[in-house]
Image 1 (cartoon, rainbow, N blue to C red):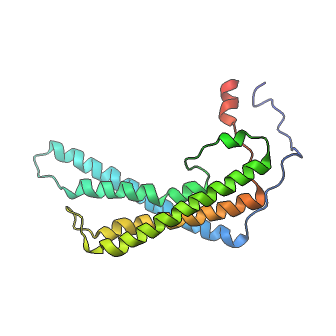
Image 2 (image 1 turned 135 degrees about the vertical axis):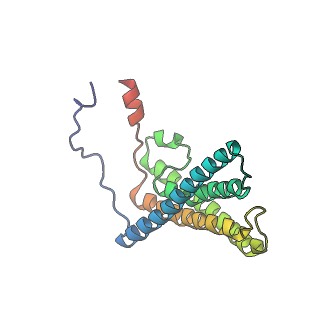
Length: 191
């Protein structure tokens, strides 16, 4: 039976999920837009700087050492700034073994506990990034002369976001339960 001929009518076994309070939707959307904007900008900068570095190899001009340094900093920013978005979209690295357990109560408990662990790690990373922003402001990067507190400051945004989003996800899973496992890829492969 193909996916097109399968009966996909409404089922009564799927409970309707309660939405989070309305006041959380807009701030999450705005925060997501800001984080994705910073991440997209970092990705474009990396792309342009790598093109510049490639051209510098083949042109008889002196290279700019700051291009490699800024590209590496942008990679760090890209990694940490979008981490919160991944938590919200449930796209972060996770072990999905527990999703196969039939008991929704066990899935709910494991998801809430895992979100609280992510939030605790986020608190630790936030505290360390804040300490680095305060302590490393006097240091400058070798090629650009950029204050190192900027490197940690943008990463701090991602750590705070990850912490807050993990707490929101824990509340969501606590109220609404964990979503049922999705095995769409396996169904397509089996057919």
